[in-house]
Amino acid sequence: MITPQYLQRMARYNRWQNNSLYSAADMLSDNDRRLDRGAFFGSIHATLSHILWADQIWMSRLSDWEAPTGGSRTVPLYQDWDDLKARRIAADQNFLTWADALTQADVDGDLKWYSATLGRGMTSSRAICLMQVFNHQTHHRGQVHVMLTSAGAEPEDTDIPFMHCSRQQCHNVLTFCQITVTLLSMSMDIDTLLCDLHS
Image (tube, rainbow, N blue to C red):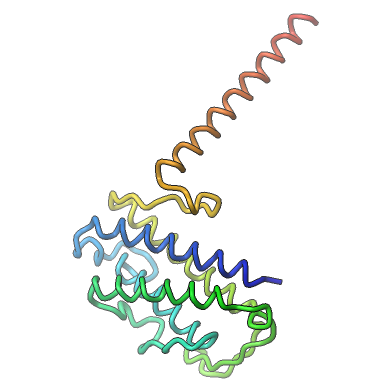
């Protein structure tokens, strides 16, 4: 069972990661963002547009968001980069407002909707559909992350425990962990050596 608290955390994770990817993509030229890099939706711009489309279609079913025009393969739905960024920022704020107002009753039960892709009515657990929203985002953001890094951009870390860290703070945490592992390894080697000397 998922809870409103889980969804609140995921809404914040969604905003953090979108800020990271869009900031990194801003460092590229518009041509680089639109270059077909072999991903499912081709380019960085088109994949980010698809993520927003999916958020909007799901939240039109789960909440009171306006449904987007076009289908899931209408790529890119939002042609202008600045327009796409503005819509992303607004959507992420809507996610926070929505999640912070949820009760457990909003999470439980079933959801019924019509799937234009499948051409029929659907019924599923509301909790499953809510998990799909955030799982879908993460899936396609992973594709964008790969395209950005291959283009020389540097998105932030993606690990949830580091969500509230700055890049430098996360680097410091990782460095501390690496040093700790090294010291523990050295300690084990010394213990082994002492055992060999006394055997």
